[in-house]
Amino acid sequence: MCTITLWENAPGLDLALSPDVPALTPYLLDTPEPRPAVIVCPGGGYSCRVDREGEPIARWLNSLGLHALVLTYRVKPYKYPYPVLDGQRAVKVVRHQAERLGIVPDRIGILGFSAGGHLASTVATHFDEYESPALDAVDAVSCRPDFAILCYAVIDMATSFAHRGSAVNLLGEDASPAMLEKFSNARRVTPNTPPCYLWHSAGDTAVPVANSLHFADALARNGVPFGLHVYPGGRHGWGHGWNGDDACSWRESCEEWLRLAGILQPKSV
Image (cartoon, rainbow, N blue to C red; front, side):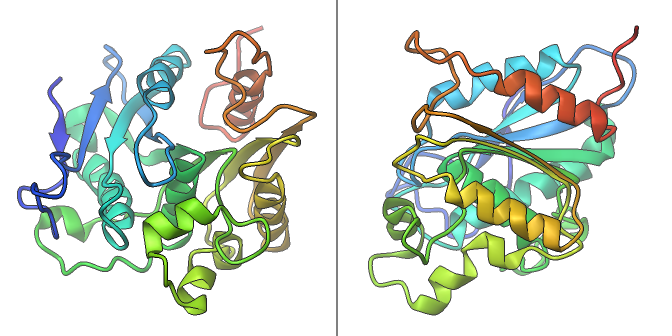
């Protein structure tokens, strides 16, 4: 299937800044029955999008029986609100086109790595703050995802464990304390935040594990179902097997959570 552009004329789009147009690349299963879907947000510090966190993850999701769509969202030199708008609009587009795509409209998740995890956690906690006027029928549907998967995610932008590069690239070098607080997403969790699965490496020095721990604590305090897996050692970007030394079992742990959450069917005995 062809790439799905998010808007006919995307707000703020300037091809002189970047050739990237906000879009979804679909990896859809050939099945007659509607299936849940996951929007994949590769990481890259809001300065790029890492290829190994795109198509390979979509193919893995397909192996679980899930549709997947990899998001091309705007990065540097674009700043807020455009990456966030792209993430929110992606959920709206998938939900609006769910019947045509063979997707269960109330089983649409978002998955992100590192800064893509920040984008995913922002969509999961700021879905009631869509900072664009309604432009078409797509904007009439909700941008709240039904679940989120956050992989060594940047969560905080205001404390000692914030990822400074992501904060600067998204909000600017001179972002106000109020804006840094606003996008420190553990502080945005409410009882209406969707269920989440998080994983992180305790040895991550680029995006400290405190990001995931604080978000999980906020989910627990608000009664939101979640799963959390912290691996000893490791480093940032660990868990892909792309360089021969990543053996963690996050895929298996995530699959188990998806089954326990009712997004995947239980394995037959």
